[in-house]
Image (cartoon, rainbow, N blue to C red; front, side, top):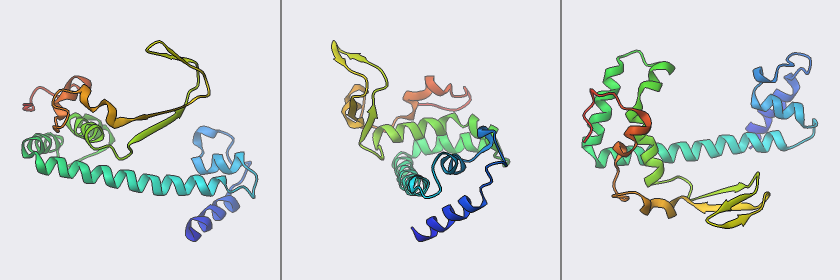
Length: 174
């Protein structure tokens, strides 16, 4: 926390309000510093949430993905072939071509979500199965409730997402 606070204070000190007026070119931290007064704790809290929330969820998701691939060597082989098809020069454009990888990540999210519940404040009135839910209602739902909507819901099957990511025809999909 002390290290993060030091970096936030340095960012506040280095922030020049006249330097950039185009908010599209500003970092999220700079936008927060600009929006809040100099004594506000919001930039620090937001930075800590992003760091620790990002570390835990990313690390857990990668761990679960590795587990599912290790437990399903046939899926691992499909992903290996897809990665090899890109060649040695991986870049952002090539990363977008790794459709089976995207499907594996999404299937990992579905099968072993890093968070078990989603919480949102409704931005508009919603009708859900005949029930009227007013705007500004806090809505909670468990990602695990919907598991049984899938055939073989307890299986790691990235192929169920083939139609979403349009896998190349040259990859074997079982």
